[in-house]
Length: 205
Image (cartoon, rainbow, N blue to C red; front, top):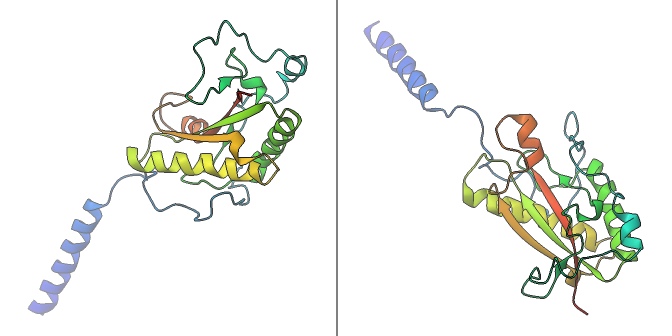
């Protein structure tokens, strides 16, 4: 009987210690959801809210009329390769932001329709290149989020390459959690920060 009491006490104590050591909440610092960059998965439950993204086509008319850039505004705005923003207003010619599910670099069908529009536009305007920024929400370590942001940017790049956009016309950069679109916490904020941002650029001739 004494041994039974000791065993029950030991089991109860172990359970209390284990429960007390569990971390509260989840963070983005976990194993990746997928291993195949550039894949497409079904929409997660509830889909992804893309309402905060810009409406593609807003800058289309201006771009078709040759209003690509104000040379004076971009006198010092080129990167090391001479690429310059195609839209100095910051609207990125209306290119939509591409959103991702939690802890994932897999493109979902609700976002690939926007990528198809971007690919078609780039294929009609061969003077344009694309810088693709990868971003994360603020959960997880800096190192993990930087890597996840890079995978997200590369997933977009791979998809566009599959839509006949030449690889040399695209660059990727990851900001991890350093440049949130929205400050704060909670799912309504995090979903807007799990994103890839395509920035159209004018390439040197």
